[in-house]
Image (cartoon, rainbow, N blue to C red; front, side):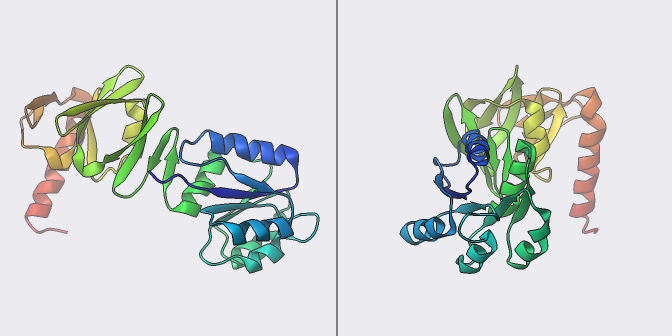
Length: 238
């Protein structure tokens, strides 16, 4: 898994501390580089590549707007400022998002989603074809195509993929909300299945490989709705 390297351009110690705290909650970032002026930021950018910039507008030597003019494109930039007056100018310079201080961790992660084209949800990073999930203190990639089904396991989940079982640090409700719904369906309070892995089904259960997975009564209508949609697609309907 690629870990992102970001640069914080900010002269407020409290704002730097907050950004570093938020970044540290996500296991997909290296410790950020930090500088407090436009001149220092330009020097950092010339010395090494960055995946993302957090940029304050009111800096001691120059405005952050001046620095935006110097950034190579398409370098993702999230503006972090207490001043709403520069939002239009910033968006004209293609910033990914504009965070008004103070901002919450949830708002921070939404900005990351926009800037990097991914989804950060709790301890997970969700991308188009795969998801990174935590197993203990390790972060592991799971390709959607390899996941057979997911089973609730207390506050954790068991992921069955290619005859291997992995226990991840996520509740089944979190995975249900954030896995692609066109590919995964919850059919029981304890099970989410990969729809492409169904080999057969009855009114009461679904078979995936050698596993018979029950269809919960509360989820039966949803599963039957999926089957009706599948029938329409096979008949060539829109």
